[in-house]
Amino acid sequence: MRNLGLALLAVLLTLASCTPTSEIRASASTELAIITITEDRRMAVLLLDALPTSMERGSFEDDDLSLLVATLSDLAIVTGRMSMGQEDGRVMLDVLREGASSLRKTRLADTLASVSGNVDSLGELAGMQSAELFDLRDRVETQQITEDWLQCYTEEIRRYLRRR
Image (cartoon, rainbow, N blue to C red; front, side, top):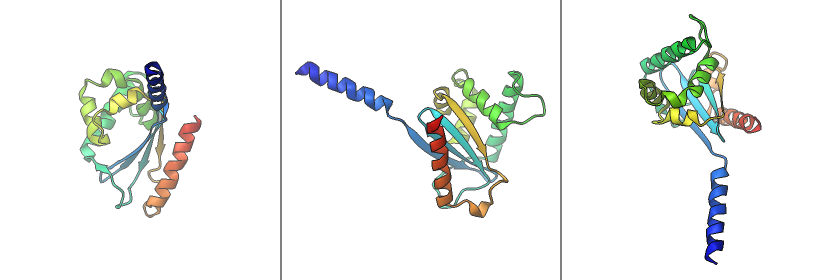
């Protein structure tokens, strides 16, 4: 009977570890709003001009964002994925995700933590299978961004991530 209990415990732990994880985080500065959607080891980063004021979120300084973008841009240029003067958010996100495990002990980890609001963003990124960027800045009117609209849009992104 004792072995049956251990076997059931092992099966339950295995099933629990296979359960898809889903998380949505939001953070904003005066210039930009970032929503991170994680769905079963796949990530989507949604960039908006603003968030509804009633939405719970973290905040970050515009200077931290500028430093993060400059660092990621340099990293993408050094790895040969982007040329000087070019700015491609998708490439920068890919470079960050691919190098996340080796970047965990750098100052970039602190800068990313201050922007994302997550202490171990690089640790999470290292475990991601993919990361997508949805840049809706200047594409969606600020007054259109309501909690209902955002909830519908994030649900669509989650469905997209699950199908990949």
